[in-house]
Length: 441
Image 1 (tube, helix red, strand yellow):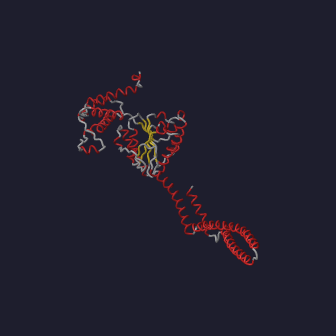
Image 2 (cartoon, one colour):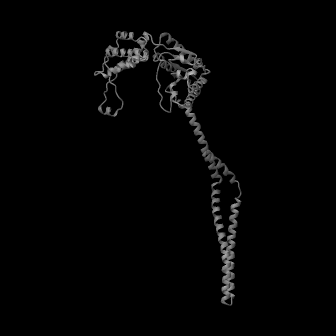
């Protein structure tokens, strides 16, 4: 508003430049000066007449009478003279202000003021425009919890995951490779991208698979959990959801939105709140027609709770089930390498005391006994107990073994630690299956 007022004020100054005179105030000043000069002339004439009368006066009485008449006349003229002086001073003040104004609005000065105001006006609106453009191009939507997009406004985490890192049954693995090839071709040929629905038990790698597909195809991805929308008010939730979808539609690079816990957002309308229903309607509007700009990979372990209209938006619905025996072996070796074998090759801390004091980076000490604990024959015994276990369960077992090894005096991994971790996990899963009835009872 201030910039607009300055700009308009500078335009108002221009008509004044073309005026030949400023008649009203200057004419008053001219009359005041003329009246003052006339007053001085009359006063001098009166003094001369008084002196002539005094010179011919014949008595003191006459002289006194002349002085009295002179004083009366001079008193009246002095009053008029003071009024003239006041008018003259006021006129001079007005004259000074007008001269200052005329100096202010000389062509060069007025042009500078106008250009300055125009510059402020343009800079203000240019800054707002640039801010919006930067926010649109460089700021990752606030809903993103993990993303491959580089951002200038805050760190974002990206997990490097190859499709081969996700352990799947052979038939499912081949299907994922085929779908990945199809997505690559559609993306490169500017074809429409189909939405995917991955469903199955928790912990089987559905989320990891979604991010791996994005990286395998060469697209950016944004991961967020639908449960996060429950943290916001309806207005704020809609704002963030619309921002995400608009960002996906206008992104220069094609985008995959990996939506975890999708049943929160895609549930049946008759049992959801008004807030969730409005969020669902908004998202379905953007997903209604396939687009070459983005696709959604929805992740859920409760597909039966999905709304019929929501299910119709997904061109591919794929079940990711618990791993079979061979896949469990691969997963066990994968997490055994990550949490145990790699820890056995951690370099010892050879830093000197000064380096240790100045450094804030903790150095892990290596583990011992890993090859014997993860021998092939012993793993076969363990795997027979893990029927129905998913990748997350096996990862928990390996983390428990790592924790037990670091809790021991010599940091040695033993078969006993692995057996105890497996038995503990089996007991926990049995309790979950029974609804924790024994523990609660």
